[in-house]
Structure formats: structure tokens, C-alpha cells
Length: 414
Image (tube, rainbow, N blue to C red; front, side, top):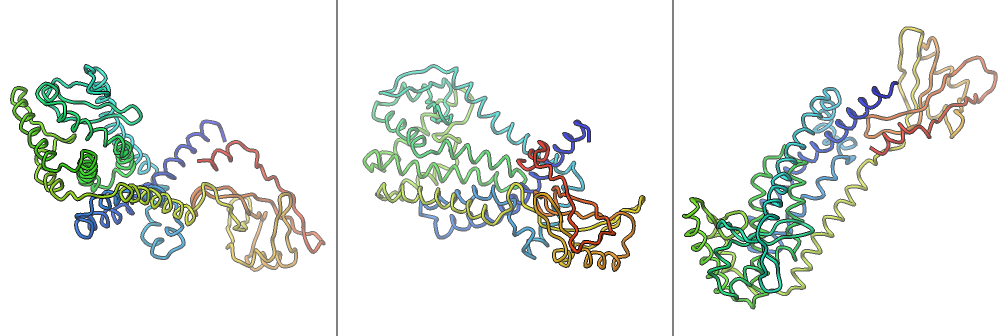
């Protein structure tokens, strides 16, 4: 095979390999979304921290594409095996899905980059011991970035608010950073891009951010001494100030990062529901959700195929110079054929009786061992030619294992 032929084949194989897995993850994400949306509207409706922790159930979904369930469980094989055939037989479908991932990722992370550049060009001021970036337009206070988070506040607030009010707003934005919400938003966008075929992510984005905002409100109120009334008043004041200022710019503004003026009632209800809580309990819920996600991902790994899997199938075929005839790879072959790193061992009498039963003609080849990526999808086996006429009871046949071929190593790593 020429180099360019190998690389074309390799990239097509990689596209199908990952597209098959991701689309299976899409199907599973529908079920996970159903669980999340049901629980947050029923049992966990007023459980702020547990409701927020529910969204961590989506992360293990990304690791579920190679589960043995899809091949070894009758229900999984019936529901999903046909889908893999579409991706392998029509490679353009695989590339179409991956193009969708690329477009969605470019759109989501392109917005992040554009916002980052916009914020970097803003005036920087000191607010207490913290740096804030000043927006001339009446945008809502928000925080952007992941590793170098930047807090943005509108100039009108900095000019009209008192020191205590500004510190409360600043505390709210810092709380997003402390609670890891910026990283969670990044993970959410990554899931949304990889599983773009699931339209529930559009609805889920709003709900996910609502839940993170409610957690942040509660954490800010607790840190601020539990003053729910003052916090609610500040929220209402901010809405009024920004809305009045927005008239000068012919725009609509709100207090929250997502411009959630229409959700002000929901947010106020969340503030009214505030009850003092122990930080250790909230931290425990967060840690438990992380451990649960990691544990679920680890469990999924244990019931999934590896990147490359040892293939112990033995099969035979005949070649008469014009046609290739495959014989069944029945369990009988395991009784008459074995192999190690250097040789294949064949029970001559049993194997030749087997060939006569199959009406084998021409050269007979034995294929064995090697590896596969997924059952029925991409792999490599070793082979040798069986030559009849030996008088030995056990025929020993040498073969080339080719383990040092870089192309084989590359396929295994894929």
C-alpha cells in the first residue's frame, strides 16, 4: 500500500471509529437528559445543590460509545448495530457528523474567543483589592475566561452604586470562579459540540445556567451574612438601573450573565427560598457528584472495549487462483489449531478431514490472532498457508508477527 493510500484509509477509519461512538453517546444522552429534567422538576425541585449536581450525569456519557452492551447484549445489538454499518459503509455520513462537531465547536468557542478579546480591550479598574474590566454599555456583570478569569462590570454601576453594593456584586462574580462554574460552562460547551445532534442541549443550556446561577446566589447570600432581603433589593435595583441606562443605547439589559430579565421572577423565588446551610454539606454534594461522575466513567471503561482488543478468532479460507472461499470459523478449529509468538500448530489429521468436509480446493490459509478496534470494525490478524502432505501429526508453520510495524501501532493508538 502506498503512503497516500494508507493515510486516506487511516483518516476514513478514524472518522468512522469516532463518529460511531459519538452518535451512540447522543442516543444515551437523550435518556440521561430525561432523567435530569424529570428529577429537577419533581424530587429535587427545591434542592438547589442536588439539582445542580444532576448535570454531572452528562459527563460519563462521553465515554459510553465503546460499551460491550452495543454488541453483546441482544437489545443493544438490535438497537445500535445497524447504525455502525451506516457509518462504515457510507463514510461520508461519518465525515458529515464530524463536520457538525467542528462547526458547533467553532461557533461556541469562537464566541468565547471574541468575548475574551473584547474584554481584554476594556479599561481596567481597581475595586477594593480586585481588578474589574469596565464596560461602557449597560451589560450585566459577568465573568469570562477559565484559567485567567476576568470580571466585567458596567460603568453605570461603578458610578452609581455604593461600596457595599459593589462588593456584593463582585462577591457574586467571584463565587462563580470559586465554585468552578467557568470550568463547568467550558465542559458544557464541549459536550454540546461533541453531541450536537441532541437538540435537548439547546434547552439544557438555559436550565443548566439557571441552576448554576441559583447555587451562586445562595453561596453569595451565605457569604454575605444571610441577608436575603438586601440581596433581593440589590437585584431589583440593578434591573432598574440597567434598564434605564439601556434606553440610551436602545438595548435591553439584565442583571445576570445571560440577560435573564425574563427570569427575574424565578430568580427572586430562589432567593426567597434561601435557607442557611452548612458549607461542608454543599461541598460534600459537589465532591460526591465529581466522584460519581468519575466512578461512572471508570465503570463504563470496565464494560467497554479497549482501544485495541486481542482477537482470538481462528478462521480459514481457500484460494483457487480466481475465487476466495471462506469456511466457517466454528469452535471446531480451536480444537485443531493453536499458535504462539512464532509458530502455528495444526492437528494434521483432524484439519485435513475438516477441509475435505468443506470441499476445500486450491491453497488453504489460516487466519488467527491479531487485534480489532470494535467487533467487526477495523483490525488485523496474522495468517499462514497450510501445505498438505506432511507426515507429522502436528504440523508446525512459521509466521511473521510484524508487531514493529508503525502503521499497526498507529491504528492501535487511534
